[in-house]
Amino acid sequence: MVVFVLLFSIVSLAVTGYDKFIHYSVSYSAYGLSSYFLGDIGGFVFSASLGVGKEIWDWFSGKGTAEYGDLIADFAGIISAYSLTKRLPFRPLLVFVLVF
Image 1: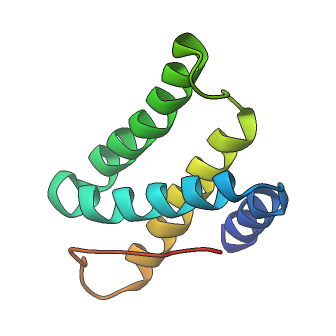
Image 2: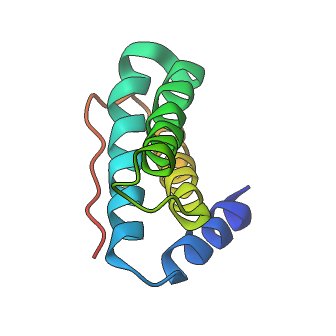
């Protein structure tokens, strides 16, 4: 599992573009906060909905560019935050990462 998370994170961060780092950071933080209130599955559903919803918005609005790389970065952030919260002996209220 650890190898999968690391590989998934590296692949997502290797994609060029500042936007991918923002997607990773927002998904990481969104999972950390939402999983505190909604549990693991609720946090995943909430965070994944934010990422997928953003890409759907970009696709239909024409104001942004919908990209698969953004979704990969979103899910890499969610998986990384999940692995962090599982390693801690307590469930933190805030989990924050800013990747640049």
